[in-house]
Length: 576
Image (cartoon, rainbow, N blue to C red; front, side):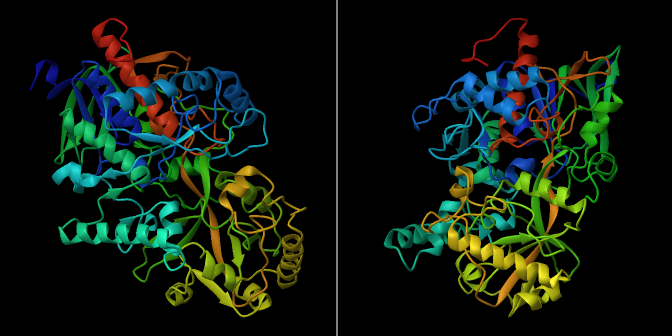
């Protein structure tokens, strides 16, 4: 027990071990602070570890190299044309001015390695200021064996991002695996993947150690935590923040079932992952109905936000949406548990898939972003039941692409039909009856959809009309990479709900990631990062990676600000 009744003292306490939390902890520690990282679950990685891993960091050092020179004026124009006034202009500017520096710092001082996409259009490519690539980066593959025995402490990815019971794959890997019988190159790549995976399992690993996507990013940050000997506690939830004379001086953390008072001489960073599984906050802030249909870890119940509010912090306002949306299909297992599948990029944009509401009518460009798709669901639901909506395809599409949990290439799917996840019928009329939707509406929609596919132009909703649409379609399909017919039975459908991949509403902060009180003043000693911070995107979704980009950036900003306090002087990027 230390003076003042504290049971532990550090310079910085970081609560939550996702990208934002680990970036803050690492940055502060490199800057000379003693750091404790407290994670309430038994795994490191948070939402980051189960995500796609993209990081939107405009003006990063790789943009020129991949053929997409950029400028602040260009990306700022795009932000104004997408985010607009849904988030404070000062916070948007702070992000754009810091994100490249944050990435550069992490790549120089940690295991983080990111590769800019040579072609990856922003989600609204027709708006002024959009880029066709360079702004979004992906984590470079990481060898999980480098974590040693700590590999088991890394949160596993979603099962939907793995095959063969534990082998992680990217979209490129999927394309190779589907083409192993048609391409020698794909066969070689597929064999390498499978041999590596089975080698891992024979060596006793509980899953494959070739880590990609968000799991690779979380692993790289975790490797730095280990290498720098940053103390971390697992199974250590935050209970309260300690406040003295208006300053947050520490927190009570539960460890091994016992509450411990931890003094944080410089400050506390709250980065617990937002509130997607909080019934209270969902009911207050989400449109109805809300599910819960979230893809986020079920541990993300908003306690960081609520505890910060009890210490005087306030929620942000003026946002366009409280969450980042994604259509989600749900399989109920025999034991009553659920498997959620996020329809992000694989199936909706491919030629031959149509989305309809209860009237059997299309209501959206199926190849739009996942966020826009759910926004369209809510708009349509105001007049026609659209929660759930229905994704419909024919047998050719199913065999070529698959849909949701139903895999292509003749793979077993009878269990999905029996479970009520996948609907199958010989005709569209029979399918409509099974779905409980309007028969004439579905038949007419399919006829119009087929005419559009034959013409190669979707006059109703513009499927395949933008570079982003076509990027996710089938480049070999002509005349429109995203438009194909629904003619060959049996026909299939899955229900999709208004899911999310995280919350956008959170603790209002300033440009230094300091939490603000009701008067807009910073609360000394209290910071937020990740989805606990009110999104600088304001609930809009301009491009891939707009959650992890700000998480890393403001984690770095918070850690840097805390370290500057400790040193009482500014520090160069080379040191912190």
